[in-house]
Length: 256
Length: 331
Image 1 (cartoon, rainbow over the protein chains, first blue to last red):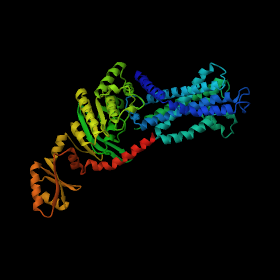
Image 2 (image 1 turned 90 degrees about the vertical axis):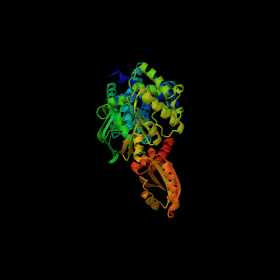
Image 3 (image 1 turned 135 degrees about the vertical axis):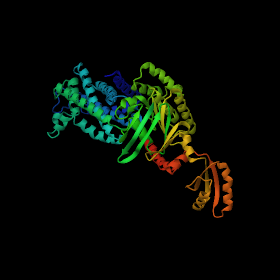
Image 4 (image 1 turned 45 degrees about the vertical axis):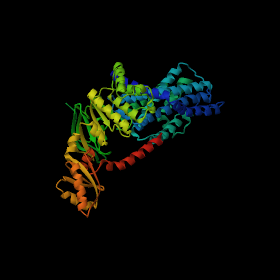
């Protein structure tokens, strides 16, 4: 890598940070949905609620929090793709495309920026849940949890950029992502154990990358998981890597 | 050295030729204009030269680099000011410039020096730390010009640099453009559909219509083609009047345009009394108004394309209006 490659990634990241810090409404907007899920389901189903496939010792809140963190990462990440379309709409994409830099570095910079903002929001949800009574079993697990959050972010941001690169406008993007986001979220085991799904639904849950993200987060934070940690980690690494390649490829094809 | 070399360049969109087999070259340090109505292919040409669109056929070199094979070298040599704003509104002017400078690999010291220089050039140094969303249209355009110059480009593209600006701001932008061509010796290619703009700024002009270059020369030479002055006569009935005018030995060319007949003549001021006499003598035609003027690029355009630029424009203006409305609603 030449120094200029880092510079490109850095400057794309820096821009995203500045915009993030100046748009407070955006933070509140994207946090609202996971927060209400956490509040209603966490408090509503807390006492004595235990689903088959959940550890007997854990209450539902403990089970739910890693799922909601995964949800936060998913939502904020995919919507990073929207920034590509905003840039297209407001013309700034032309300024980026005409610059003498590698398209891959532009995508990597966007991912770096998106992951940082998504991590901040995921951590905010984690902090809120601590106040609601969520207990972290293993403090070192937090570091592992950050790694999982990071990987979920990279994968779905890459995915969001890939979709945004082939879409013409924001309405189309929103429609497509709504069709993808909710099934991905609901079929990830974020709210119920995947083992409870009927046989025909299970394969869909098993090809859903978020399933492994949520499972990894659970392993890290409450010490309970359905898949080996190594498997979840590998699948997310591969997913992230593929999405970076796909996102970069489709983004480089964009004509403005 | 040639700053730009274009050979048989063609761009098709779904089988429609937006740019049709054009060739031209631009000298180093020149201000070169592409003049034509909206949709004539000016922006498409610029985008191909700036590596944003791939040509369907033909080749183009910018500062000696091929726009298809040496994209990064081309990108490094050019600056571009787009027709529609391309700034990040949530950043300040300084941050926009800094973003740009880093993308072009300028080191910290150069960035700081250059930022001051370009902001001073466009008179924005006092507003450097204001968010761009609070800028007026003219200020945004000036900032974009400053940004285009940030990385010492060899060639600067200006796509409709004064579109939608008020006359005073337009005049200011013209002065900035002249000033920086003089001071930094930057080669400039500008597209415009304002005749006065092309006339005032460009050393040479290519008139482009339906994707083809119909004329290319210095503004004065283009005007000389028409020869002398133009007298516009409003007369009824038109068909009878033009037959009469064409018989006059001192009329070089007569053509009907809307309700007027344009006559190309030498020493127009001496011909007005002659026209008045014709009006008195000929009972079958009536001359209502006579208007004498020096030929403008508008007349040159009319001469080469058979219509004024405004006629080609009207339908396009409607489209733009719709587009603006949509954009406002999006916010």
